[in-house]
Length: 113
Length: 112
Image (cartoon, rainbow over all chains, first blue to last red; front, side):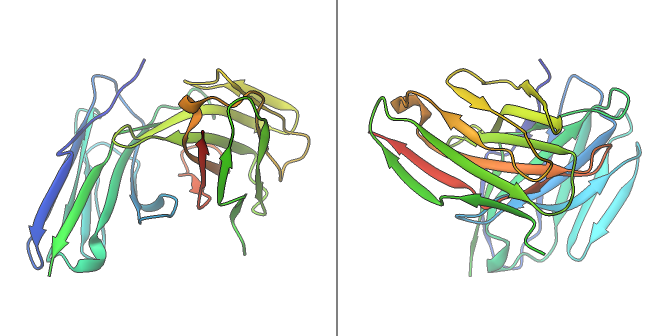
């Protein structure tokens, strides 16, 4: 089946540093999504990407849909303590109007004040 | 606007017991999903539904059952709980197409 390889698995950074994480796949996706999960909560959508090459920002977050449609990355600039959590990439392949999201295994981010 | 609501938040079951995890959404979404999350393993799809009366298996359906009698509700049933079903369960919904999913806050289940 389709799989997403998300890296790194975990990151320990100092407050103020920039963060970069990525997802790759052997399959092509129509849509890439990035979610954040706070401890004890469900994942929350951060950014959605719909077109190959698309670069989208949401505050200090920037994500890109790879040209080959097989990868995506997420950058966080000037990290702050509330950025702590698990970040998931997800890819969607539509068949007609139906498709299921495939999730990466997550990147656990820890930020030292 | 409640979004996706899951109950209970926590539950401890004994091996062999059964229970139903409840999920309801108030966004009139056609698509609903059940995932389980194990440490370091991401989210694995258990079952999904594309509308009332229609359900289908995901990646890890064994040991679970679902029903979708209304658009709003999508309960997940565990008939004979096993320790391997200890996990955090998330329900999600979507309007379909290439829109992202909205997740509930999860049910943490421990089987002892």
